[in-house]
Amino acid sequence: MVIVMQGKFTISSQEKDNRFDVILYSHFNEMTRSHLKKLIDAGNILLNGKKCKAGEKLKEGDVVSYDFEEVKPLNVSAENIEFEIVYQDQDIIVINKPQGLVVHPCSSTKSGTLVNGLLYKIKDLSGINGVLRPGIVHRLDKNTSGLMVVAKNDLAHISLAKQIKDKTCKRQYLALCEGVFGKPDGKIETFIERSKSDRKKMAVSEKGKIAITNYRVIKVFPNSRKSLVEFSLETGRTHQIRVHCKMINHPIIGDDVYGKADKRLNGQLLHSYKMSFIHPRTLQKMQFEIELPDYFKDYLHKLT
Image (cartoon, rainbow, N blue to C red):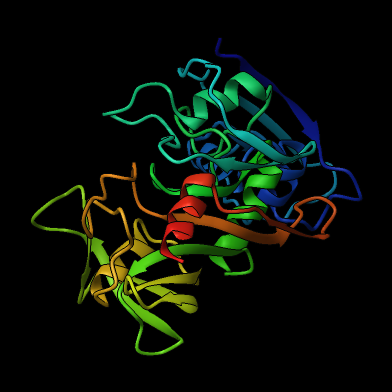
């Protein structure tokens, strides 16, 4: 149900000289500063009975009053979805997403998603991304497998989202690609936007958003002219690795959108196998690495 939050508090001597939004965040730390600013601008949070700016400096004895509704209840059902929890504490969950699992509900997929499964296994998730994407800081495509980190509260969500934006959250992938690369390593830097001819696809363009992918060839299979390649992201655009592989004429094996389907597979051989970031609360570096899934390893074994 929707809960109405009403009340007031007085600024103490320890809180004076701070910005209005900073102090509000210390009192309502399960909300984002951007959401608190919206409440300030809407007049739901007042300073001495009047509207003010988020950056207003506070004085001892100032009175803050508030009247607003909590985040709307989640309209997504909990379902017993199979996925591996690699690590979990009070702030984060690191999971191994299987191939074929959609991350969050959308117009074409109403249930059976990772979010439905998270709601079944986890009591609390961050609410920053709204009712359909609780806890989701980043995503993997349906047929991309591997590591994802999920936020259990808004403190973790803000920290992880900032690390991804600042490129301090490192994500590395393994993919089997068509062909033999001309260079053993390199950087692909383009702009990517939604395709004008097919809105379900992304495409390299002269506009769009900057997309930077680094690659390193791990192993070449000369008889089949295929390459096992490690990719690391400097940006996180939709379908980024898959689009870049298509652009350089080395599409990922099994990618029926940017390459061609393989009847032996259920999707592209792309796996998020390594991830590192700073823990939002302890500030300790966290690093995770997982093996390739069996279907990926079996495919590689047949190439040797």
